[in-house]
Image 1: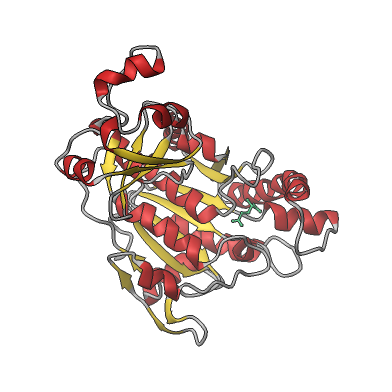
Image 2: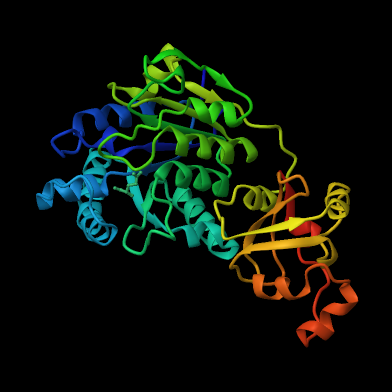
Length: 364
Ligand code: GLU
């Protein structure tokens, strides 16, 4: 049966999946999901990533406006998150299952040390037999630094903990060839390309901030990190059993990857703080597995610090690789196009000659 071989499963629940139109937590529905989780064969490590803090906060505080300013939504989420986690606690306790709460910001997944710390916390929660319940830490999320949707957050969590399955429950059966008529569900996807993105319904429901596009972004992360991803309908009772039994979903198959965990982390970054453009010579050298040197850099875009994850754009304008830079954008702007032995005299201090070392780089 589907999921029989899954050992580590992340289940993502959107706001409209856990909160009804009146702003109430869907307790009855949620109990059927817990029953499904209990029925999963063998002992599984399960993580739940759930939205709903803002939706529950809004109904509790009687704030009805649809478009709320980010500062206000942060405060509303801080009220709603207590309600959200409390519902989870009550529901799981009824079933004698323990839970833990993890609130995450992009910094926690995009900085390697913090990501490893988070990974350890997840692993220890599994040892304690407690199900981690994850949401974005909305309090510190600003418009520039936030996931904003839990789809990509769930995928990044799945990648960091080495999950083999991510299930995104939403209010449709999956990705359709024709999103308007909701006809012709795509059952299986092996490659994510522009064509697929053009099928994504841009419509976002009233409670969430994601949509099909962020789900495809999440699928990209999963495909590169060896994790199967499903989009399935969470509006039905017993959503997990229904999904397994009726086989109604879109499944994204992962690439067979020999990448080490660290490189999977690099390639799955959501960071977009910078881009480095390279010439033809550097493109050939990088394709042959070499490190990136200043000589091949033609342009730098964005403002980034040493250690950040940036995109390398080849001479034809394609996204070619991702990597952790050993210099800031300011420094690279001073030494781009130069030979490595000129670095010290220009910067005034001696340092490495690789802008991005091959061990810190993954080709896309
Ligand atoms: N973190 C937000 C919440 O809990 C929502 C993010 C999303 O739309 O997925 O309300």
